[in-house]
Length: 387
Image 1 (cartoon, one colour):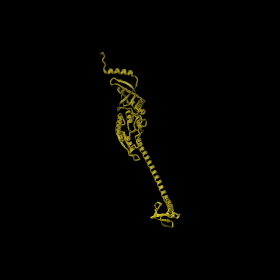
Image 2 (cartoon, one colour):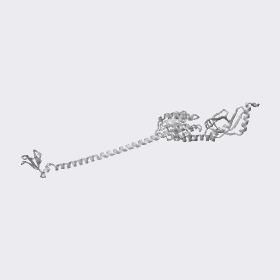
Image 3 (cartoon, helix red, strand yellow):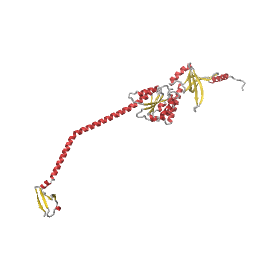
Image 4 (spheres, helix red, strand yellow):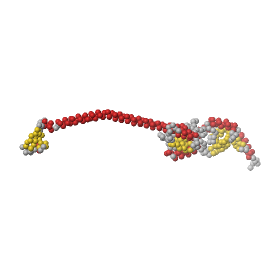
């Protein structure tokens, strides 16, 4: 044991001197923000963390952005990234390393690099996209076609979301009076728990898939940070596994989320989704009405042709009947003439005679000696005895 015994403050003072000597200039450090708070004086306090590739926490630290600087950094970060500094972000901070003899180590933030946060978020999103492609599921939901009549809709969103109200108003107050059956599956659509909440809701929809024509996921807009949950792998993968076509309308214009990419149909806003569904019904309605018009015209044309045919028949029937009767009458006259020519009287006039025995026409085989016969001429008859 050394003869010199240092007090804790003295030890920390020695460490502080070493730290000051080694970190004489600010350094850039990358970390994930796991805690963020602002006090009444305007200071911002950060809790930072780093994980290794296995997801194990390997380092933690606290950092402070003093009010005078935070007034500049806060709007600057929001302007450059489109989202406020928030928990869950990976950031690059220019920090002054300080070791206070009384309070221990701390980091005083001097600057922030918005491009690093944007690049990291883009990298994470691209990793999700590449993973879905490698698993062969990226376009799976796009292969599902909407039914001809898309009326029974499962909606995944927060019940209190303004976008849900806009969606329902547009759907129920459509000018054609079409009726839709809408079932809400409540879910968070913002914050750290949003992705898991939407995945759970989609699983509930999947259990009742036979009751619906399509799934709608909507949210009424928000910042880039608010919409970050729609870039998550679990949500995207769940959508690709759905047996119903998914329509996304999460209300943003700046970027296309991973959800937009994997959904069967992607529209900008909840209102646009409702307008799409109404227009689809209107298109089917117009198509059916077109078929009805064509069928009505075809039936009318057929009836007109048949009516014209009947009128023609009515006109030609008397003439045809008269001609038919005349032909039949002429034929009867010919038959009468033929019968007249073949009558026995006319045959006798030509010099022929008939021999009768007992009043019946007789042949040579019927006659015997002593039989009485009658010979008929055209102008009379004589009786004689066969000798």
